[in-house]
Image 1 (cartoon, rainbow, N blue to C red):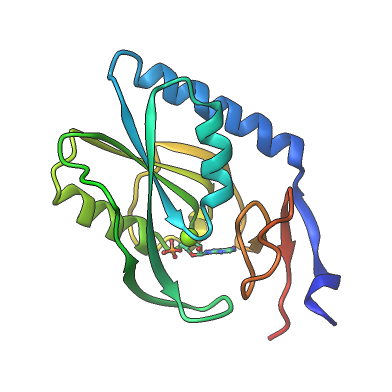
Image 2: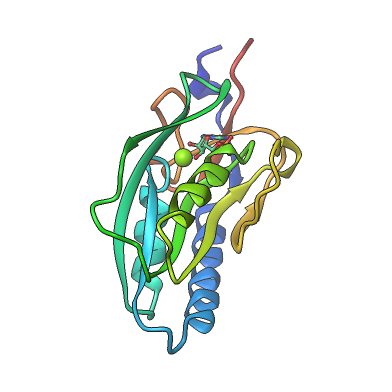
Length: 178
Ligand code: IMP
Ligand code: MG
């Protein structure tokens, strides 16, 4: 069966929007009076979530990006995270929020937290639209979480399957055949 024929809705667009709005209010409340913060989007999957979150934040903030890879292709985790593109700006002394599409095994967030912590930000928190708790292999903290989801392969809202489906306006599930 072609992969697009397996596509089903997991989280409708309106629910995603409402949840992102709530996350923005939570971040605004937590950083009230803290001055400017830096949102770090993890490319490529986080670009749509970051764009929506950023536009809903009242907290003054800058946006920077970092690119990592932990998957060779398809859906298999290699467990090894590589830095593909570093930040343009220094995070030393800044209040930093990492913005990820999804926390799966946890390796990406663990790696990012480690390399950014070494640059001595004033504070470092994590924000993820989705989390697959049952897939976690390392213990990671997500400070701002959109949704906990089961162990399925999700697409849309920036997330891809073999680089497809990123621009779907809702969170869908695809079921690859083995
Ligand atoms: P982790 O390092 O295993 O936590 O994986 C994090 C990265 O894997 C995410 O940023 C995504 O790019 C990718 N990923 C994990 N699960 C999915 C999924 O269900 N759909 C799309 N991408 C995923
Ligand atoms: Mg990602």
